[in-house]
Length: 48
Image (tube, rainbow, N blue to C red; front, side, top):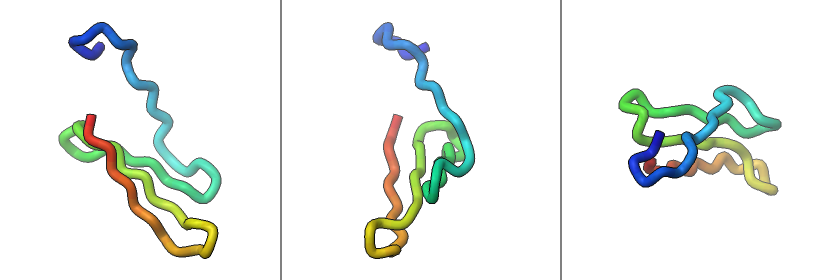
């Protein structure tokens, strides 16, 4: 539970369509990878 009272983040690992979500080893980052409209692989990371 986050310390500011927000509900915990729900995370479904694995493929979602052509996109894949992973959690970093230290559990402080979500990494999202997948193709854009031109089939170029994009990587996004979100710090928690």
